[in-house]
Length: 106
Image (tube, rainbow, N blue to C red; front, side, top):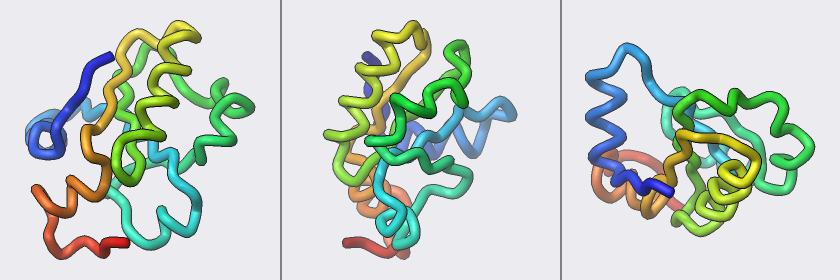
């Protein structure tokens, strides 16, 4: 599975008209606290039941707080035939530290 640093994702989002799907797998209260603009929330526990809502051929960046839950979800998606899954290394905590210091943190 590919890993992407927050700074790399920021460059992609700024430069690419065909931005990847941003799949946030945190809990709703976490998503309400802070999020990367454009991210879609599907909490980790809901992913198996909602996997049909996702496009297996789309480039998908999976996001959580520090990168652990997102890595588990990314592996789950890869096992189900998703071919372009990327884990955001360090999650939103790293995004706040490296890209958006004004982002709320928890």
